[in-house]
Length: 202
Image (cartoon, rainbow, N blue to C red; front, top):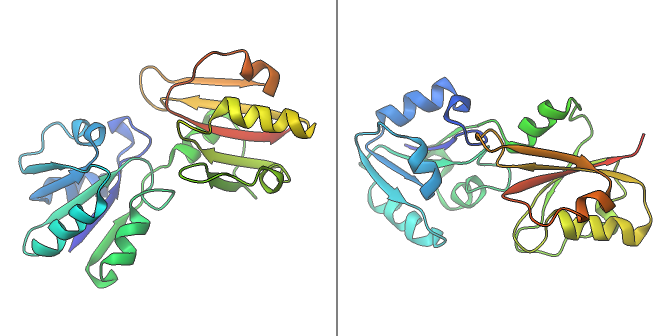
């Protein structure tokens, strides 16, 4: 059985009890460098997951006799590794443990409900901003190419009235949440790892 475990937004206190228990029972832990560093007292083997998911899949398929857990930030099924693994591994051999996503986390911090939320990402694609900005409430997982500045420029270009929320390093000690107009967001020179919420002005 392969576990795919969401660690939450980053801080180890957000890992679920079930996730903790399954990690403790695992012989092998696979994940990104930062995620593996979060699990400090693990006694088994740790394998860093680079960008080549095919290699990880091959390792999993050739080590079915081992108790393996793949760990991922947030929830593995919100723009995470869960989608790829669930499409390439027999679901009878999968155990998914959802985590608290960065999306859920940031909405709890700005006291806005997630009802009727449109969720999207800029990872590896050019977003359809006409469609995205037609929604009243949006959360976007960003990347290094399309982030707060690019999103703000697209809002200004269309002349729509929006509030932009940028959540950086969510749940870590250096967490920063910035709320402002697109014009105000553009005045900030740089943002760290982030998610962006776009809301209609009220």
